[in-house]
Structures are given as structure tokens and as C-alpha cells.
Image 1 (cartoon, rainbow, N blue to C red):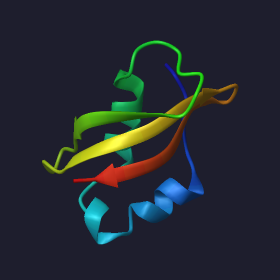
Image 2 (image 1 turned 135 degrees about the vertical axis):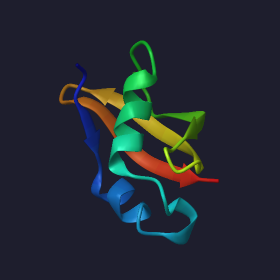
Image 3 (image 1 turned 45 degrees about the vertical axis):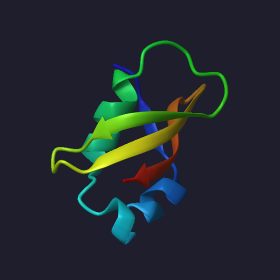
Image 4 (image 1 turned 30 degrees about the horizontal axis):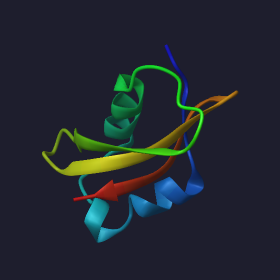
Length: 74
């Protein structure tokens, strides 16, 4: 299973109103669902949290695993 690393910036964003009801497990599941290797920071759209809140992720693959740079709630 791929390791997902969530940045401090992304964790801080989860506290904002626009990202409310998005949980870490939603982010980890979404990041793991992206196939292939992501060499540069890329925005992936159209994920839905268990609460029903839609969100986008900006991720990049690094030696430590898949790095979640930020979360954009809809």
C-alpha cells in the first residue's frame, strides 16, 4: 500500500470553512486512488468525501510516498 504524506499546510487547510467535513481518511483514500507516478505537483479534481463534500487535491510523488500538498474544497 502506498504511503500518503499530508503536509502541514494541507492539515491547516482542513480547519477552514471551505474544507469542513473533509477528513484525513477521505484525503488518504483519494490520493491512493490516483494511478501511476506523479513527478510534478498536479491538481486532481472531482473527489467526494464520505460526508458528500466535493474536493480537489494537489499531489506529487516523492521518495517518502505520495505527498498531498493542498486540499481545495468545493
